[in-house]
Length: 164
Image (cartoon, rainbow, N blue to C red; front, side, top):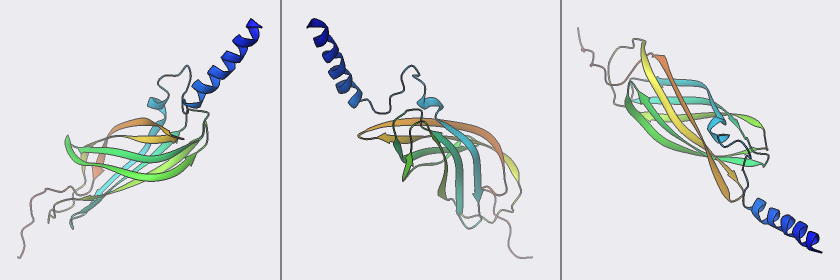
């Protein structure tokens, strides 16, 4: 009789504990730190005062539970100066232990300038995270990437003289 109670208690305890732990990856505490890989970064500006940051990510769901990618946050620095901090909302289903490519595009507004386009290398650092929602709980998977990009035109250059 005592062993039946122990087994019943173990089963009920597992059901209660397991129901609130969606997205947990047992024995791998850094699973979400390794869940997002930056595949490509593209940064372009125009003289008209617009720009675009495009990120290509590979997002892996380390849990056996199905999830939805609900949002991504971003912090972009070029040559050490913060260019943007933002967030993008989405709904992308992600099965348990599966991988999905994710392309994010962030519009940029920069000061207008008449500087000439001259491709030069710039240090670009992108940090952020992708939020995976498992039922009522959320887990954030961070990412970070630093690289040097040849950017054809950077805002803030000296204005070109007009006229002859």
